[in-house]
Amino acid sequence: MTSGKTKEFLRALLSSIRDDLPARYRDARIEVQGAIGKLWYGNRDIHYECNIRARLGTIEIGLHFEADPLTNARLLGAFRSRKTAVLKGLGSAARLEEWDRGWSRIWEPHDAPGLDDALRGRLAKRLSRYVAVLEPILREELPAEVSWRLPTTKRTA
Image (cartoon, rainbow, N blue to C red):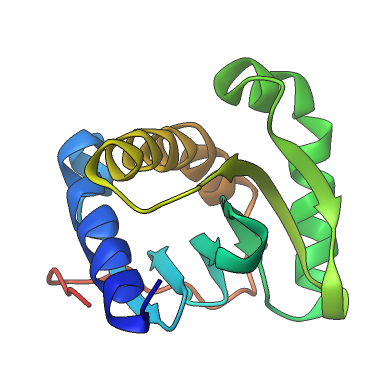
């Protein structure tokens, strides 16, 4: 799989998510770097991610907390306290966990033997579900001192 095909797949996936989102969440910023696509609102360090792991034949999607360790731990704790609601909204495939470098995430893996339109459509729907379920909780639980600036215009990768 070529780098160009990967970036094209991620750009198309992230752009198409807007169509499935509630209107109040369609102003997301998106970015593609290599095999990782990100969608975020008020703080780039707190973002939804799609990570193509070609060698493993998988794609990981989820909400990542990659701010400072205290913020990440506080957000993960807030989501863990609402785990029943999170799993009701996302299903049992979603995992809440601490991760690398003091980061944490709510995520799930998907088999990806190849990048095609059907897979892109399924992942776009699934990632848009993550936004619809998790973004209201995130905004309610976000610590007051965390920088948060909503976009004023749409930006694309």
